[in-house]
Length: 136
Image (cartoon, rainbow, N blue to C red; front, side, top):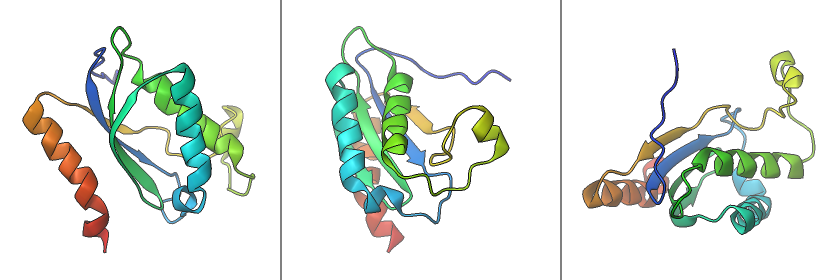
């Protein structure tokens, strides 16, 4: 089955990106490295962060892409890669991941949602803001 994504330039998207090991707390433990990953990638591949929440094992983000550029996948992959390369190698790496030269920090896939209208935008920003509260 072919996975189909909505790819539109100058559009907003909501993302959920998870660590591979959901009990780890790498994102909050190494928040400065994650911040640097976002900063570095935005220098060469600009995008706007409309809303974001960083939790210990996953993050939710609303991103708006620039005009004439719809490649959010490149941005997400570069952020994940930069962050992973910044960490010491302490995780267990499966044979499958080793063969693909992957670290095993992140889940391979992430969830994205194309924002359709203002109501959809507001709903997802509210989700980002209230997600940490729901966890307590």
